[in-house]
Amino acid sequence: MTLSTYTANSSPFSVSAMLSASSPPITSLLYPKAFKFGQSKSKSKRIFSLRASSLPVYDTKLKVEYTPWLIVGLGNPGTKYYGTRHNIGFEMIDHIARTADISMNTIQSKGLVGIGAVGEVPILLVKPQTYMNFSGESVGPLAAYYQVPLHHILMIYDDMGLPNGVLRLQPKGGHSHHNGLKNVTEHLNGCRSFPRLSIGIGNPPGSMDMKAFLLQKFSRSERKQIDAGMEQGVDAVKTLVEYGFNDAISRFNLGQKYKFHTI
Image (tube, rainbow, N blue to C red; front, side, top):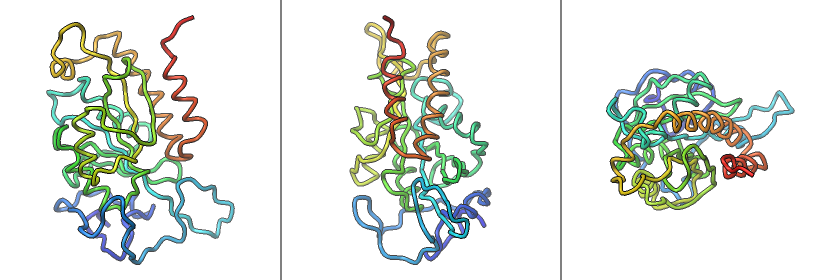
């Protein structure tokens, strides 16, 4: 079964269907017009016996379908932008894909997509191919088509408000003057209650132009901090997907905040 063969009466996110979907759809899929974020979903037939964000299964006879996660890294497509500060969201998606053994081999709704799972929880990894400022054109249709709730849409992006290599995982927030995040919010009907993993890239030195800074590659020392931070970020994303925002996430954020502080 390919991603383009699902109907309104079947769930596009049964675990078995997700993991068997590897071939790209013939055409991009558009918004289901009746579905809007911030409103209740229309009643439709579903094959789920039970849905849970993170729920241990003690009765092996009970079929559990976990609520999927849509994990999106923001960046710009093309080799010109590879390794630049503004593309750190793409890099994090690549790290998660390698760790979870997920192939980014499907094109859907203007995005490069990989389908897999973290533990028993299905995930959809996405790298929008629309260029940064139009990322919502990919995220909005994917979230609506797969009926992913807002609190399961994780956005990963660069943040000049954090020191280089420092990460922060939050359940909601604003767009922080980030044009890609702003565009995503607009395509989710202005709703901001979605998780976000921001990756610090520091501020432009001196009077350096902000755009030039964003499109610049990291120095050797900065790259070491970024690589170490992304390894820590992958573990945090796994924890979030399986257990939600718990004490471990709070400890992660605290550790990130003070990891470069010396006594």
